[in-house]
Image 1 (tube, helix red, strand yellow):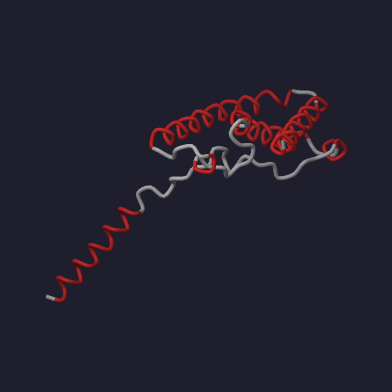
Image 2 (cartoon, one colour; image 1 turned 135 degrees about the horizontal axis):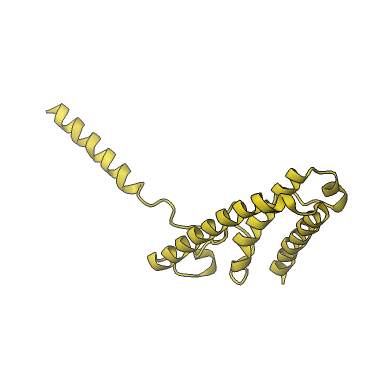
Length: 147
């Protein structure tokens, strides 16, 4: 009799864990939490880097801009959720946000593949100028947030 009660309790405990583990990702961030720059550079620092390093910085900045710019009317920093903005966190809005994230990731994969093939042929000065431009744009977002 004790073994039946033990197995019933064990089965109940396992079933409850499975049910409660179904949807832990209910409050998804509007801007991806990976949309951050590790470090901002100045012209002199960039001039001392190799072209391969510059390419990686360039791609990193493209990623952050693509994951941030479409959402600046809602938020400018990662971590802001639908609930934080007073937007209903219902299934329809979660689905739209998930679809947008998937489409953005597909776009970024194609863009990064293109950049890795073509950008090595670019002039180093143009690559540095583009990195600085992207960084200034990202810095402007911080000022935009303070308005």
